[in-house]
Length: 187
Image (cartoon, rainbow, N blue to C red; front, side, top):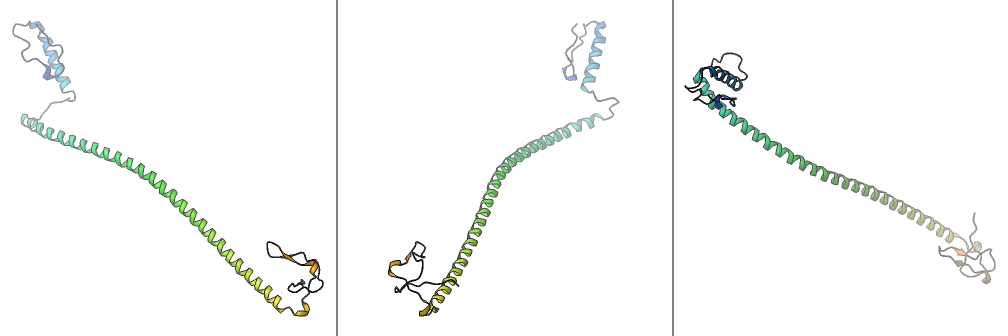
């Protein structure tokens, strides 16, 4: 007699065994195999199953539909995961662009500060220029107000010259009249 030894689940049992010519003494082996396959096929059943055949038959299409729904949901979740990954990649690129923009903004702000400093320097130079003009005007007015008796002339041997800044050089002390040169005393 051939005893089924490789069956683990109901679907693996051979429906023609045991055959009528098999030994009766091997019948208990067949019964143990059937019990084993039932326990392996329904491992979580610990009590009686009270559902009718009709109920169980109705469950199959419902379960198939639910399994299809679950598969569709899993496919949707996988699609969402892929989209999230793509968005994360884009966000990484956006973060890089954002860093570039912030760096450019910092450079612009730094340039604006430099421009303000230059404008302030120019303003100070303009103010200094105006102050200098006023002082030169005051000096010119002072020179114009000097009377002829206050003017002292220099000798021909000791003529003044102008340096690079426009100041007279070569004069050490007043002497005889030389037309056009003026000696101013500090007060």
